[in-house]
Length: 296
Image 1 (cartoon, rainbow, N blue to C red):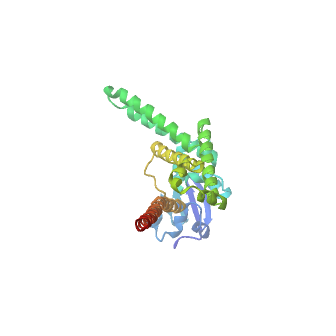
Image 2: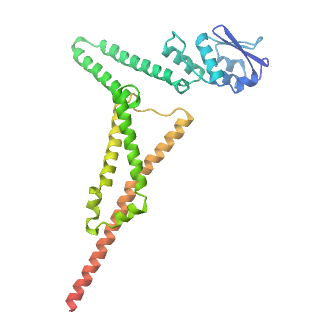
Image 3: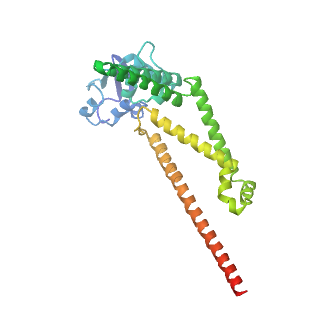
């Protein structure tokens, strides 16, 4: 900031807060910290609602009590809802000041998720309620489908929402643990020695009948089914990360997916090469035996 006094006054709905310029620069709220990079009053008015140059006071026409709770988060690191205030209204205040749902305490995140789910379902019901009379049956079916999808979504995405969700989460964790144990066990020398002792002519059929192959197939089937169901019941099937950590995590997931897609191709290629060499070796042995019988 290249203008004004050394102390900045933030006026939110009539409640004033005074901060030095250096504090404004690294302020945890993005909208407030943007004031430090403003070079003119025009840029300032793009961030706040009004500006008093003489007092170096910035006016924000926002909910003062909500901002007070947000300032408690800045001071103590804990963000909770304002009592007797709509969760969605407080969430709008959070977005305005540059906060996300991840900054909320876990209990408040649950409350916000429940409120957004109820609002989404209510919106669907109102939307279908405006249809013509001859579409009453179709709209009622749509309501039931939306409620069913919302119930399924909460079962898969919120493990603490119901007993079924807890059981599903426990089963998923068990499958992950079993898959990890099988992956680690397959690298043990004894495991590899046992696999190398399998009879040559039954090499490919025994691998499927082996208990490890069955367990691995069941785990892969469970993970695939869970992924498909999560995609079907998700609200937004085209979500994309908007934060830097989210983009990093998304990039790692993309790389992991490419690697997983490449592994079967490599396995198929090596299997084909191995089969080709075995057939070539058997053909050579057969030719040699025929030649020996012919000369004898």
